[in-house]
Length: 225
Image (cartoon, rainbow, N blue to C red):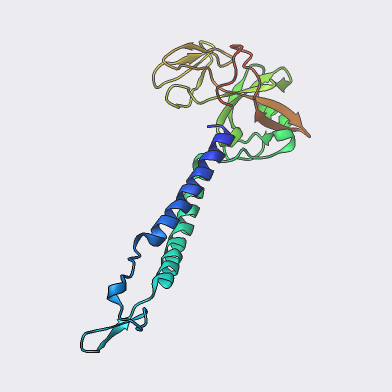
């Protein structure tokens, strides 16, 4: 879901909660009928026919205030839960230089190009933690790496797709979807190609950043943006 639509959805949810609070504030307030009060008697106290005092009863204004307080006390944690729910499922992209985030190893530690090249050779591909902590493939090219990373999440049902060097394809073990060496879908049931991300090296660190441009494999707008 685009960020603007998420913002509008959260705003509408907040307005709905506030509107509900206003309605609830008067939902349980019963109007005082004139015949229920004797002329000259106080609206905050009731007496039985024998004159016995039956207890304090708040007037309309106080009851409304009490209801508002109860609703406010309930609404605050509700808004906190709603915000936490939205943040969990739609976390913001982590920041970084030029919009990039460090590629992380299996433990989340930043990967440097020098460390990568010590254990990888031409054509090697390995999973790293990329945008939002999702798995991406870095691809070794000569004495460096390619300037794009390929998302490892299958576009069918979200399985992590391993690289099969024997057939030079990414092959999903769940339902048989296949993608070529650049992540373009070549066999279903997956409906779309794997996602892309930009890769750059800054001060020796490998950075991954969003890919909002046209998908060079299909000529279409990126579905993951």
